[in-house]
Image 1 (cartoon, rainbow, N blue to C red):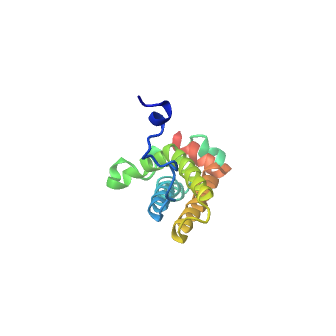
Image 2 (spheres, rainbow, N blue to C red; image 1 turned 90 degrees about the horizontal axis):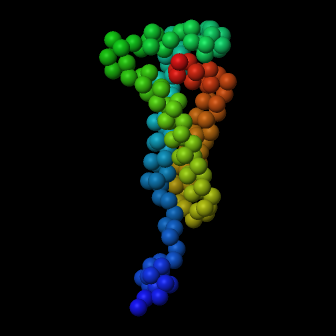
Length: 153
């Protein structure tokens, strides 16, 4: 009969569950995810904001809903460009959560494996954190919150 200790910890089981530090591929994937969110925010929110000359209006007017994004460029008849508003909408909703989660995981792995990862993995991880801070600071600034309100209107 097996004892409780043998059932919980088989003899061939390694006691260290986190044996290998994250590779540069993991960090590159995180960077690409945050970069995709940043790109979709730029193309789906910032470009329509500037192209439609909304930067000349007070932020309160833009955020107040006086200018509906679906009535401005790009409209449904613009072919593939009509996907830009959907990219902007996804970037301010799901993308924000993705950046928060990715930056938390990357920051945790950099702290947990400090000094034991390759230089390229550390560089990609720090770049991911810097880009995450830039994206979050932009989205959470008063200007970014006004644009988020405009997109979600």
